[in-house]
Length: 112
Image 1 (cartoon, rainbow, N blue to C red):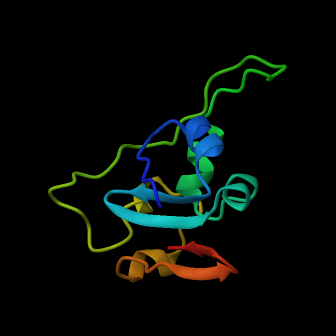
Image 2: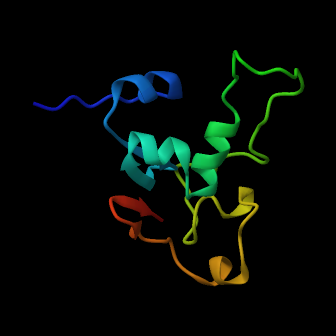
Image 3: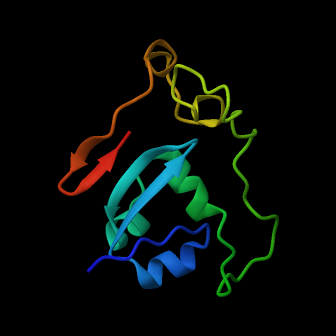
């Protein structure tokens, strides 16, 4: 039997899920087992989501992390990667390509 959880609460996902699919603008951008995904996120959006989680064990208080920019209009998605304007790892190749497809970069770890 399977159960599909849809949540923005990464703490719940970490405790309840075996596998995770991270979505951005209606597309899966990363998919992996929960432990590898949380230990080594490969997509910049996944890394940004994890960096934005408030930690109760943090020793320093500071400003909460947020991903720069704003999400795209879901009615008018770009032909390129929807995360491109917000991505700190974007290259010229990213600007020239259509939407990236989900590819295996490691065993059982897929990234767009």
